[in-house]
Image (cartoon, rainbow, N blue to C red; front, side, top):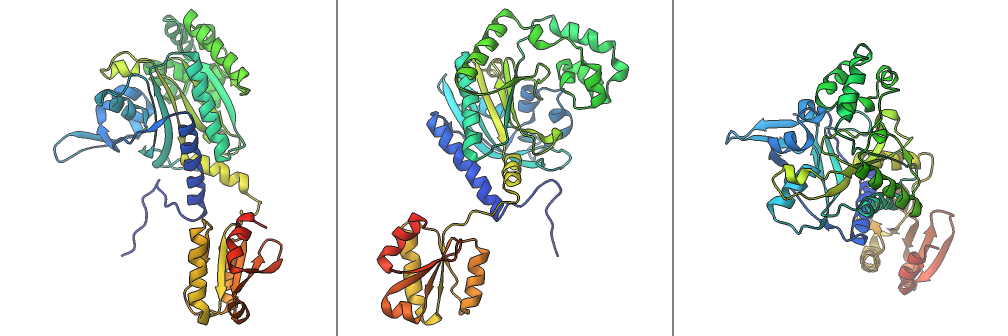
Length: 412
């Protein structure tokens, strides 16, 4: 019987795994630089954690959660995002009041699969607890920008906003929307009741036109939020981080309370243009039963980031690296010794252990995109030397065995 993967999930292999590793390595490097420690939370949680944390009226909770009853009749959910789980762990394990944490792992949402969006997807995220300062907001955004840069994502733009509106803003917004109900889509009509501010962020062109003159959050900020937002913008400018403001950008989760931000790309189209996003959520820890604790963070989807990197590489030759040993079968022992010597020196080195012609071995070396091919024939074996061919320019030299590692590392 032949099996196929389920709709909305994918197998990751070959060149794509290398891109994922590059992104993950960049994240680990940046988190270490900023003093963040890793936290690993369960894939399954109590369904109420997300209903309460994300918001009962959000699309994630209403439409997209993978939830089920287990054998103990407990209502379980496969986590749709990372922040709620990290907040739960922060409280439950009595972590230090000031904690900077990062995570990596799979999330699950029952969405319509499309490019860069899957039902099982991987996120890298950061959560910082205990610091209400605009300096922390700027630092978190700077960390996110550094992660994207380190991962090699060139096509990126930062968009920011602040959600610290006055109490009467909701009332005024709903009043405005009520007068334009006939121009709003079905989803927006539902959002009016649950979270009217999210109507501003609808991608439907008809809805965009209807809310064009809606009262904006940034014109209705509390004095404290306005001062905080102004300081964040000043600090970002001092850090040399370019940004644009979008007063209608609100994010899709209910827990955000202040600074929110997105890094977008022009590569994946308008519906899939966000590659990393986050913001401040100062009330969530208290809502989960912990002490009132300011917090901020972000999350990035690996699949979408990988799509951006792959698109940037389109039309360019894949980077060539490492070496492949081509040898006469009677010199297999020598070839195997050279293989291990180079690997011990930290050089990616490959060889085939079957009895195959030089032509077949060269063909395989070419398919592996190696930079150098090491040839061991009768002449090389007798002289205890190696012929090394540069697959980039075709140049070939003969060197002593003990010179091989240094030569290959030099990348000549």
